[in-house]
Length: 232
Image (cartoon, rainbow, N blue to C red; front, side, top):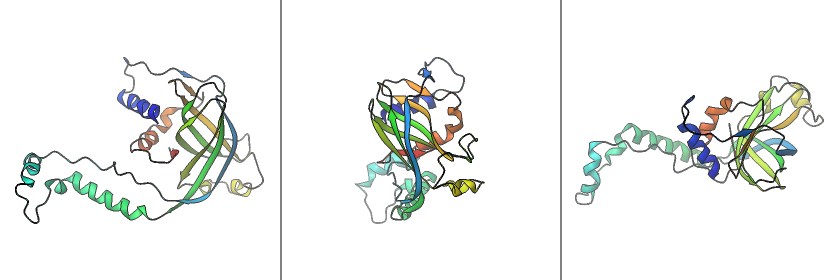
């Protein structure tokens, strides 16, 4: 995840159209990752809650004296002034919501793809999507996009595992679900972008990073736990 976070900071720090910072060169030649197998299924998982995503306490004049006087004048019922700020109340509410959800598994869908690193360079980040189609040559009716921070050594295979609350039942055509067990042309996993350990990047020609800009910002906004992938 080191390169993912460093790229995120670089990407977010450069306003659109501003020059002066050299972005990594992006290649679209060849296909560095081969898809070996794909599958999806209903699943139930407990969503990990980060303890570091609460808003920072607002700076108010009372802060300067509160900590200094707290120990000397520690009277019963004394209240931290930060708790009465908007940020403080928001943090308390967010904490309560997270704690209420922490022990409750969430019903959703697991999307998995097994990939092979066909290059001589180790991979650190993969952007990919699960597509649902009516036929192998048809345009996708539905796309589930994911960002994975995963190490894949040269010549090695890796199964990418992603969890989403959204499933294929959102597809307008019921033909996809009818073909689930027998058709191989109705579903496909597509690799959109690969970031290597040496800083080089491969990206699919007809994929636009801008279309997942907001999802990407949400995915990296909080510290990652043990999960391999996050939805975009």
